[in-house]
Image (cartoon, rainbow, N blue to C red):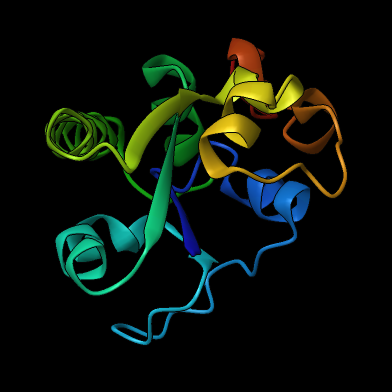
Length: 147
């Protein structure tokens, strides 16, 4: 079985990869190996039809996710909000259709029993996400120079 982890890219995919001992953003489209990266969302149907795979999609709170995109100069607020909505609309459609695709909230990385049961494996190591991702839980640091 291969494991594909995915999410918007501001939601804990690096933590998930470390936790379960998976590569992060190796990207080899159609090579059918375990990996964790945001861009696998459009590959889910192909992978599902060609391999025994499980898909863990992480979802972080929208406000915190959008703020992280903006704070890291990846997208502006409008683009990040639209991306988030489109990404999870597609993810929810896949979750409804495929028993091998499940969305987990980012905070579940702090107690990954549900993920472990879904994947059929135990985490290799654990690190609380507030340590790995200090922007998590809406604790957005103000940029210096902003009032």
